[in-house]
Length: 224
Image (cartoon, rainbow, N blue to C red; front, top):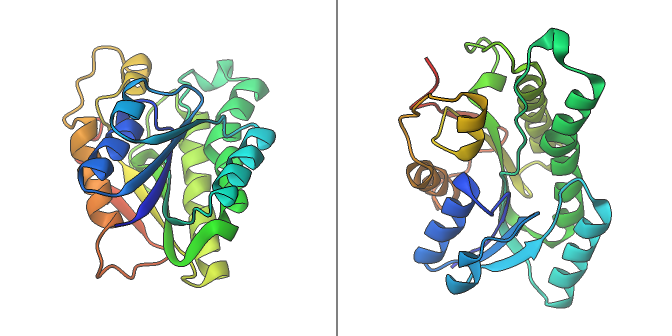
């Protein structure tokens, strides 16, 4: 049994990861700005945390530390997608996206590292759109570039920590979530959140997996 912490856990892929982890008998901690009312029913330990708020992050770590809780797997799933033509994209747009997808993720990870087991792992959820040479889509200059930055950050941390813990990045294709629907109205993704969650957890809970610093694409259902 593992203790897993998932950011962006209130809906979509994040909630599906928490739900599936709980079904498999693991201890699950979910953090998000808004708490899904079903989380308590499922036995998911939930905290209202905005990853762009350092005080809330620090309070989370203090609560976990006071409870002698250590983390086996951190899944950095929280993300923000703003779709707009580049000529209309402002500094504020880039800042909002990077504050969640890069800076917030980095701050959360840094704060949690002292209570992540040295044989544990950090899994950063990126996008196929951030992978070098992948097909890109108009309107995603802030989002795709932030996900590319996350990929590079993962590779650097893997070298810096040398597998104690391990750092890997999963680059996802399109998944049928509210965030995708808002960005691409009318587009029907080929994969549901629960299906993607199972793929992510297959990687996370693979006892024979010793990968570190790798970028793994899960691109079934990518936009065409």
